[in-house]
Length: 335
View (cartoon, rainbow, N blue to C red):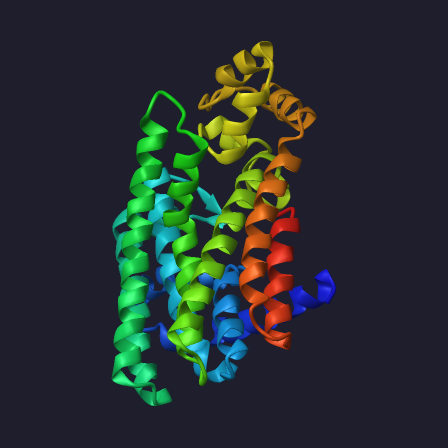
């Protein structure tokens, strides 16, 4: 399956997710729901619900059965984006105004709360319609609420790391993104598996671990994009994470491997919002020379390979190949 083919498949599922969300997240006052759907309407790859759908299909489930549960994960994801942007006071997300900039902070907080609440409401409402047992629905609610707790813990760790004078260790950073990012990938696969027709508890554990490893790899590549991303697509300048002082994985590697002169240059621009574009570009180029991009992609690939070992416990099938190819897409993407 080519990169274009997997993107086409991801886009097909994204279209279904978008349609479901737009049909089921509405109410009054209108401006509150407009704020809630602001990022949904701006686009997005919908990687997490894609993994839900494919996990469901891996065990004999149908796409229409899992769409509500996949959508609930996407709603929680968007809830985190709205609140993250408030905490970071970001102006843009994917080239549209941040929700709190467009609608104001109070409405943005409520918009995030609506998304969070709707996620659980959809599980209960559509779980009953689909015929899932009460035990399965309780387990879904437990897993999604546990993931939300992990995300909050991860965000708190991230805030602490940003405030600390010293940089965290690589192990501490990986632990933080396992909570903040990978938890939602993990629960995507868990809910997808639980909505299928032929799974065992062993399968839920397997796909949970698969999702966790994919989520860590996803964040590592996102960290790279924060340095090298195309500003026309990200809406942010090259090296934005350096200027913003975000202690991401590539920065940790750079500090370990740059020579003393370049470390001084990095420290001068790191977290300096008044740093010139030329000085930021210079340090980005110095980081490129020590192949941080290649090192991060190699580490992300190791997590992907561990995830594949889990999938290879199962017979080859179309959903399994889609899960593999989407993982490769995650590691190889440049935006």
